[in-house]
Image 1 (spheres, rainbow, N blue to C red):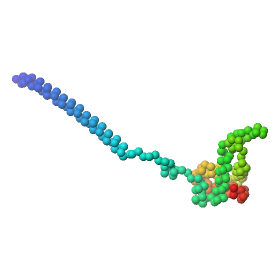
Image 2 (cartoon, helix red, strand yellow):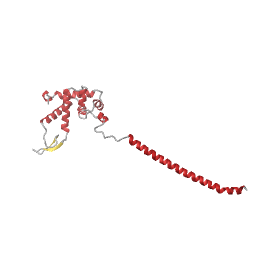
Image 3 (cartoon, one colour):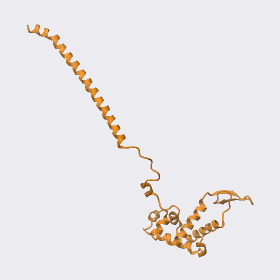
Length: 203
């Protein structure tokens, strides 16, 4: 009797299970579609908010404040402000810097038109050096010789004048105590002034 009842109810139960599975499958698909739509909606809203929050700015003209702060000043300006060098020492500083530029700017070999001897010049082209440039170079060469005779090093001075190295950096590079580069620079410039005439300093 019970077996007959079970057999009669079996098809109905099977149908119910299939219907339940079908409903569940449809509900999962709907849930996935809804979630997908919600994700797309959130992404769209986020992209719109980002566009509104960060409008395009006009390109800035010139260097930024950070770049300006990093730019180096001419050491002469710093030395003048801090009273490290006086006017005559600053004049000697400028003359040495000018001499090095004349010597190193555009060096090349040329052939003399008189005897076809190869000579070295610091001028580009065929223009000869002026008397002023020759005099500047002669003063520089004499200064280097006197530096050697006075047991003064030209390297630290040229580091400061040509490479625009700070005084503290020169102290560290040459392994000296703090303040050594300042005194060494002043003594070297005074040596240059020692053999330059007063009339020549006005030029």
